[in-house]
Image (cartoon, rainbow, N blue to C red; front, side):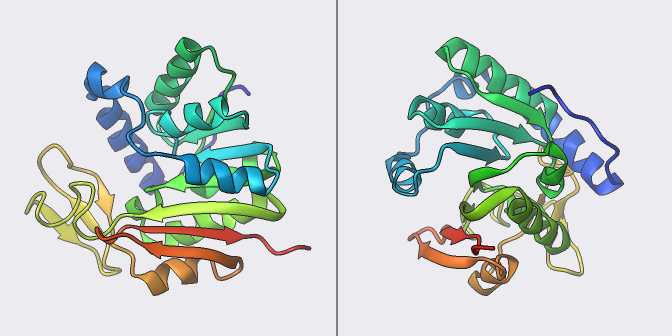
Length: 227
């Protein structure tokens, strides 16, 4: 799939600028490292659901996309950051895998013009204001086939180096979302969503599984209702 471009809001543009800078700074040893997360549970559930087409929303360094493609799924990797998409394309080329890719915000998936069996979205919505996360959840529903699965994960308060222990240099917006205003994370937004907030985002879906790790990370599966 060719790279797609469209006008974006200033908020999305600021996020894109931050993530492009962040991915440009990733050291090669980190950029090219294999996934540290065992995805056998993800692969198993997708296979059990007879999924074929999987959309990786916020593909980042491409680790999940490559793992899923290697497992036999037809993967489309999208990210707000063109640099992340470039890294994912290069990783797929080195691995000899065919992975579709596009520059696309999670809030704008409908413009891809696709319907997929499943969506995976790993630690992406945490970096959005609630209003944008709502749009992203709606956007996922728009591209999922009836009974399609959505896997989403949300960091806990002490995960990802994004909490208050990471840096004091942030402001808190009225909706509770943090925005870093100095240092290497300047421009990054982050929010620790409560369990109830996660469920509210996906209230139009059927909840399949909702687990909370010792770190506080939430991993959830939701199913789009049959039409």
